[in-house]
Length: 379
Image (cartoon, rainbow, N blue to C red; front, side):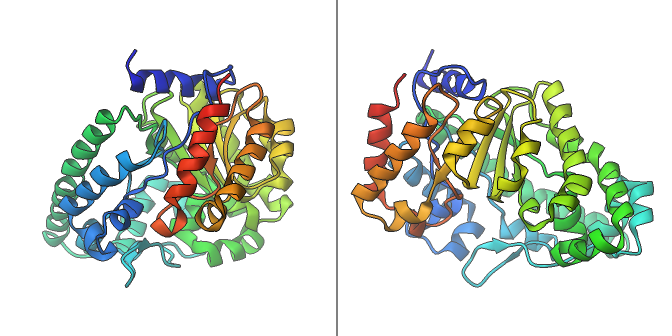
């Protein structure tokens, strides 16, 4: 086995809740962080494929890690070509998701009746304005968008794939998916809209989640069923919901989705954003040994006790500590988490938030922390 294969096998043991050879470390580099690390302006860096490739080539070898979650980034060139309203580049250069909606609360029946047709025929033109034009302009816009996508991500994925191979670093996710409720909130009704709908259109929200479920499963299934091809699922609406709304509207279709993917052999990297303390009873119902759960705000002792036999875990370590704390404080926090989470396996070292800026990290602190994990994380 080469280094990459050894790392993949070790990750498999972690996720399967077997005793691994060592505690693996999640790599911190994202394309946005790499651009800043290489000294390029964020605005130009995200537009220019050659710059972002060069930045990844410099940043990835500079940091230690056993796996990288994703190298995906939102290209302003691509979204600009589609005249997107859902993803726009800020003055600072980052591509952000503003508060927009593509569906009115009077249109639930249309969504429920035929989700694919409604999304393609009604929502897509509202979010991407090039599609809200007569032919032949719509077809030309689609061709331009596809050409822009291929010219941007084709060279990027090939180059970064080689960089990862040269560093023996596995990319462990190959698809992303959303819980049906989150998809409904994010791209169709918006945070404000769904907050009203759970009170005014409760039964329709429930039916809509059921109707969207097959599409969300289909989207996730582009990933092969392998531990180094996980489905990434960022979850963020539950901390903003009441327990009643969570139990009645959010949880049922999410659970069905997870179970369906696991039955098909998939592994899941789930980011439990925010505070999920209220929902541990639900999480105990999830399939065993197929999930790497990343936690942001949580008591690691309770997580280990309640969920340690259900899923492997990562996260917990505050980015603010690694960025602003002393080396001693960082080592103390690392020791605390290792003492709680490492025994018996099922733990990968990682941060509580995704690092998208060099302001999120301190190279000296990361080097010290990684050295500690390497020394004391062996089984």
